[in-house]
Amino acid sequence: MTAHRLRRRYGHSVLLLDWLHHGRSGSPASASALSASALLAQLRASLEHVGWTGADHADGRLTLAGCSLGGALAMLYTSAFDADVDRLVLVAPAGFDEPWHRLSHAGRVAARALVRATAAVGAAPRARGTPLGRLVAHAHLISDTPRYGNARDWFDTAAARRKPTLLVCAAFDELHRADAWARCRADDRTFRLRTLAVNHALLCQHLDCLRLDLDAAAWHAEGAAEPHSRL
Image 1: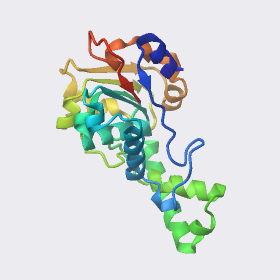
Image 2: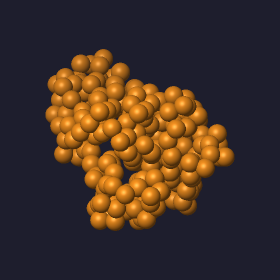
Image 3: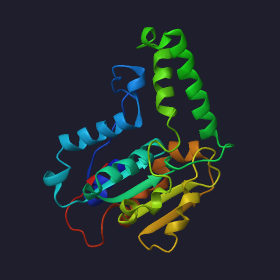
Image 4: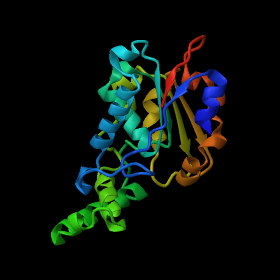
């Protein structure tokens, strides 16, 4: 719904990406191939396919929007392809170290244990395409949570500081607290933080209720007259 509202309100082009092994998308060749780097490659290939990269998108007005894992991948993409990204909209993003008592830490430990167990008994190849196979593939991915390859204090990196950013967080987030890492941008006028009194699941499941489309500055620079490319 947010994508449709952005299109109607501003005339922006919007690309919605279904990650590998999520939703209706296909599966990687093996469970171990599902990783943050594989999803980053998928994102890059998708943007290249629609012509929103490099010389084909020379105006550099691509806004990356991502929720949870999608937020971490938006950050990862920005670090890798800085010149292609104009601004960021991050909703409860992963991508930052979390203390031991967070569920993200417990999830990483459990995922790594499952990966080791299936490897020890040789179950992963036989389980490909089954519910167990999907679980093992996601376990490989979650083994990299919560940072997913991002720099430790990503908001303080050169690439991050060059991007106007809207960060939306849940006050009772049991998985990812990106706002704890946002202090270094507190005096940066291009960085804005919104905190809602909900948990991680509610924030991610009810994105449309945030009405992010009403926040014009999140999607384009003031006075921009032409449609912008969106993710």
